[in-house]
Image (cartoon, rainbow, N blue to C red; front, side, top):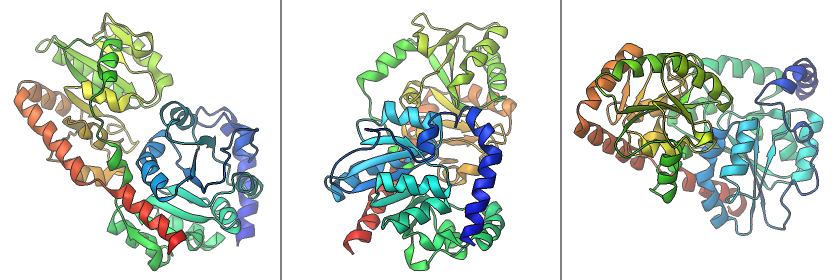
Length: 420
């Protein structure tokens, strides 16, 4: 059955390669994706090699709270990150460089590419984030003698049938994993039902909660100036927006301006290559626009945050926050990040990928709205009651503080794989 997957993966790769070569998320790093590394690309040294993989920038940030505990429990270790997307790779190099020893593109899940990657990297531990189940990579790591762990584990209930069919055809890769560190008990039970050995499954929580609170720093004021925001303005910040949401937000903002002329709208698109399009939409609506990359110190009614890695700190400058991906079928984005900055958070009806976050935050500093009309109504009410905004923001920060600690729990379980 493994042979079936090996052959099928090559056939699928041949079909998809033209798309992967031009798609903005995957068009760079071809040699590394095939398991070839230039001299100096991989960290040298004698300490344990810890290979942590996350598909996107957000996934790598969710892994980042484990870096410190890993270095404590694995003295002299080398931490190598791998990622699938270009944005993840760039973010890691720019924002996480001081905390890690290297970053590479993850190999395609091909028999040859994964074997070459594992031979070059020589991991002692491979950590896979969320549902990054790659059978060839897992098998190659296990054959090399590495331990393999899943963190922030989740298996979508709507895809459970697909997993069962897939595993029945290729052989169950979950049996090769040494450790399943799941976010919630229901997800742990789902992992067991899919074939994960029960004695290897533990509920430890979600490490992304540990990275949410950012203390005030000098960079805050520098970022405020770069965005052209003065102390006197109030800021509606829209984070991680997707195609189709900006038009709705601009309409809501225009309706708010007569009552709140000092209000500014900061839009941080999920993909920064859409910044020009968003700026054009705002100008077409008759609004003045600034771009973070141009450091528009004169300010604009609308400011587009078109840089990578600054959103978490930018949230600190907000009066209130709307998180995107929730007015589209994308399934939401991280609503707990602004909550960790002590900000009230609004989000739309489509939060399928962040149900756990909604359960944590709704009614305690988080407000779900049905559509743009309700967003307008809620923002209007909240801006009229500044004290209520502060109260709800404090609630949000407190909730985030109560659910932290998963990173250290995860590392303790990983250490047991080596020390018993």
